[in-house]
Image (cartoon, rainbow, N blue to C red; front, side):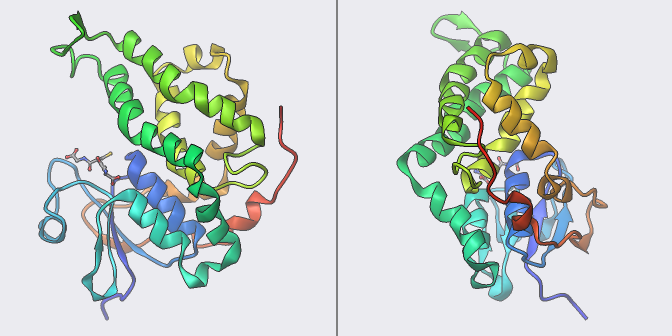
Length: 238
Ligand SMILES: N[C@@H](CCC(=O)N[C@@H](CS)C(=O)NCC(=O)O)C(=O)O
């Protein structure tokens, strides 16, 4: 019998898809997943979402959510998710959090791509200067990491003592940034971000979200569990 679960088209290493998978798992939503191959996207996915990016969530009744943040919003606001999980969404609605997310998905991602793949963008000229990965790295630090470090002064998470949607929205991108040159990143004077990143990397929620799936196949995504409990408020750091 075909499954009636929502279907997530996903790509394991995509940071947008990571935030969607984390939100679905956190909310305890049972979902199916289809791990796509980027250069050979499934026709079924393109039929419901011709823009061709992942993640895409197809809900019962064929409603389609084709932006990662819409999937996070939908998941965390499910009635069945309970008040604790809904708090993750409401704590993320402050202007500071919205600005951090906007910066992450906009300017920071722009510079991250150019820092990570300098050869791909070597032809670009900005302000009369040829692209240099290092220049983009430093701009990314000023744009997002500096305000992020300041925001983490309020507690262990971006939500203060309790995590929030902005944490899972931004963490996969900062993780990617850190991985370009781990030695350089470890020496960067952003101790709160180092601890924050470490907490999220080692979290059962993130580990579950990175489960390896077969490609081009609809499967039930494993790992449903009570992840919210693992994030009980604890002492912050300063
Ligand atoms: N604004 C979209 C961006 C999603 C996105 O750009 N995903 C990338 C993968 S990380 C993608 O699917 N790219 C299509 C491609 O590379 O062909 C969202 O938030 O979901």
